[in-house]
Image (tube, rainbow over all chains, first blue to last red; front, side, top):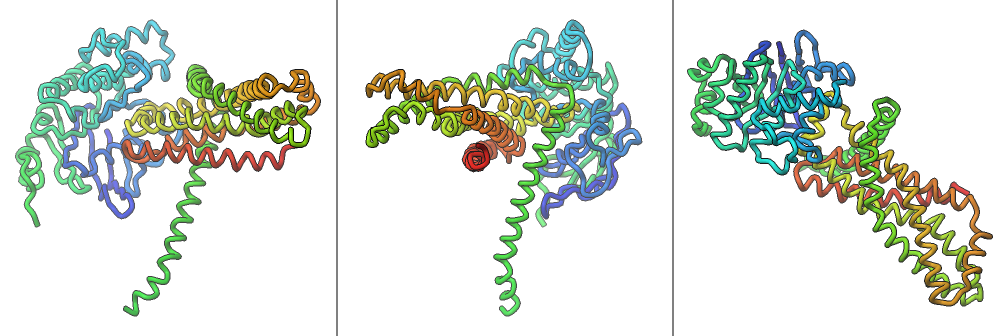
Length: 245
Length: 264
């Protein structure tokens, strides 16, 4: 379980996180929704240990990771897989080399075993035979899928998805969502996803948390969020402009 | 009105203080970055393939510009020094004058400035783009140290390639001076090279060597630091690249003067 307690972060005078409390149950798909600029990516960076909070803490399976540094933090990160918003694939490596990269650098597998794992990972995201292409030579949707393959190839226990479908067409959005659900069904991992995709995420999420102005204003099963009385949540999921004043 | 007078008086001092703190803090970050590099350098695993790639990136791909600028620097020196020496009837000293100027001073400095413009800027831009496209974050969350993969190989490659490129610059420059002094202006070949052997000693060569070695560290340190700490978007990368070239160039000249005063 990941537990976030009273997490606060400001950049200069701007308070981005104003006391986040959130629990992510083990093995669930938890989706964090909220308006752009609401602090979702900042929250994710705290979960990954890329940013340090001004106050509060992040606890992963009983280990407070907030103040961990160096090797202790890396030990926790060994359990992570991350799909970045833009894919964050290494430009100088082919798609297959990108997927192989964490295996080559973090394991002692033979090249034959690595090749087998990479092929299987690419096949699982529907990219058989595309391994030799460079990230710049494939479409945005394919890059996202390579990124998912790279994040999952080490079989991490916790996978973070930072807006994995941003900028894709509706068909690709559904394809990526289906892919995540299928992969999760094959090997249940704890998933934390930041997304804007309403209403699609209600079909894949076990829990949804609404982040608004630096606070979690509502959290629960998709049905709970969809039936919420909270005007902020209602406006967001219906795509209505917020009332002025 | 009366309340704002002290505030107006204090404001410039506040700004100076703020700017001073910013400068001191950035110098601290710059130094801490280097300490981090040294600590990473001393601990395995060593990224041999990345190191070889960086030698190619910084050194091999700069060869053409080094050969070109080295040749023309030597030719200009040959011409200008010959014209000056001929006023005193001392043309015989053209060889050592060209060689000493190149080996002690112009070779290390000009080759470092050339590589700063070509490879230093490219290094900053490459690492900067990796930063803004989250590739560095990707390495970090894979529990892999980005300094080990991107910075250490670059700095080691700078250490190896800068002295080699300087040696090449010096050699080509001396032949450029030969071309003008001997082939064009009629000085004898024996005089040009013979006097060079008499006057150029090991301390000149070592001065050039230490300079080029330290320039190798300075250029790659500045370039990687600026790339690592890039601002937002394309504008941030552009600004970091410009800053890296300007800062590295200034540091090369300042450090050159310092070493020139200290070394024999």
